[in-house]
Image (cartoon, rainbow, N blue to C red; front, side, top):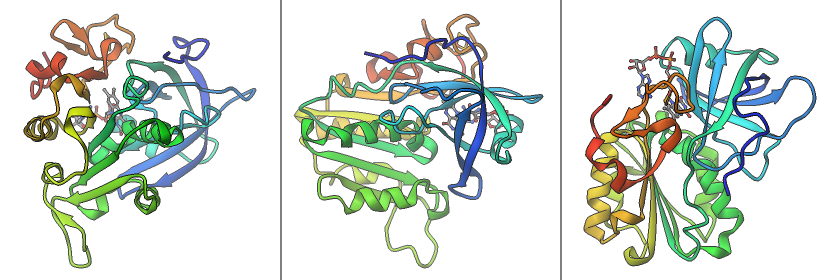
Length: 279
Ligand SMILES: Cc1cc2nc3c(=O)[nH]c(=O)nc-3n(C[C@H](O)[C@H](O)[C@H](O)COP(=O)(O)OP(=O)(O)OC[C@H]3O[C@@H](n4cnc5c(N)ncnc54)[C@H](O)[C@@H]3O)c2cc1C
Ligand code: FES
């Protein structure tokens, strides 16, 4: 069942407890509710509408651990005025949050299956809660494979966590970069090049994909070549949003609203719309 907070429509004030630089343009923010302590239950893949005073409101995925709902965590790339304001916040600075909104990765339906997670760039933050959840019930799943691609080694987020996951014997982590510099000893190439050799059984695999749409399209093709059915492939979509709750139509994708019917869709549902920025 999808957890929701008591008043998901009501913006609540949060203050910055800690901000950690992930890369040169991306920060992970840990937020505390202002006033009394309050849990923030959510399901992996859901997002919040986060408002910066005087700058505006944008959708941001929740990137923390659903098993620790007392900690609200967002990982944000500074790309414009609102995200820049969040990434330059100082300890105790305030913002408001409403949510959680949207659909989630089908973690429970995937019990008994192999899981392949394919993330490109800032596609990893919306998948990290799913990884936490899968690992906290590790015995319920078959192989768990994480394939992560970034533009360069400097663009990789969660590098120490990736090392920790890689050190486990029960998760297969493979990473790649589009362009390397001297000193990089890992794979070079787009993330889809990792799929042919990834250790999973296609007939009993659920795949979760998040990243740029072009990456999503090529990932689907590679997964299909391996024999994964499109019914078992789930993607997280991004569209610009205003209300976040299915009222304004800003995020419309065919007959669906990404804020309400997504962001996580079964691949078949969104295949015709991939690569079209706004419908
Ligand atoms: C469901 C959902 C979840 C998201 N989760 C995250 C997250 O966890 N972390 C995060 O950093 N961002 C996330 N985003 C993207 C984030 O909402 C945008 O980066 C933000 O709205 C940009 O606002 P701005 O005012 O800072 O920049 P703007 O001034 O609005 O835009 C700056 C530049 O970024 C481009 N841009 C804006 N939005 C997007 C987008 N969605 N995708 C690609 N380019 C974009 C614009 O075209 C422009 O060139 C998510 C978006 C959605 C829909
Ligand atoms: S953002 Fe308003 S309908 Fe989705």
